[in-house]
Image 1 (cartoon, rainbow, N blue to C red):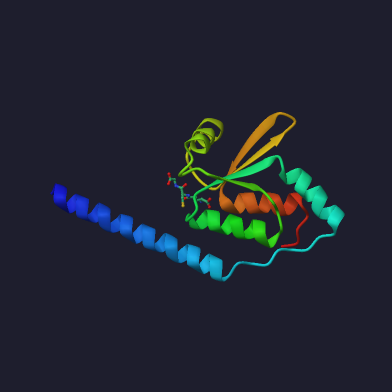
Image 2 (cartoon, helix red, strand yellow):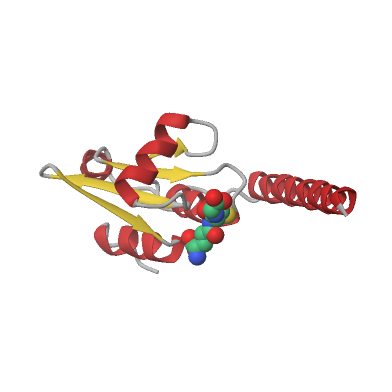
Length: 133
Ligand SMILES: N[C@@H](CCC(=O)N[C@@H](CS)C(=O)NCC(=O)O)C(=O)O
């Protein structure tokens, strides 16, 4: 019984790892090109995104979706690996309340907002930076 459990756990781990690699390869092969803004407009956006960070796992499909949106819209937001980095993992848990990625951290006037859900994050960024959908 224990052996069966161990085999299925190992099998699922390998499948998950393989799917993760496939997602990363497809992402690398089809990376979107970034939107172009005037120098001033990009500087304004960069100034605003300085107070943001995204907690993520490298091979999580929902994180890949958000990272592609960042690339497509030329949004320079710090990425924090919550799988490998213990400090970031703890920040995500204490400030957001759960270990779930992606999560967008927005800090404004000393107030921290933690936003989960990839679609909500992308919508928020597109609305905030007036990006046409
Ligand atoms: N509906 C969510 C799904 C996010 C999700 O399921 N993320 C997984 C990673 S791919 C997660 O954080 N799982 C918790 C864990 O692995 O500890 C979204 O679109 O952001």
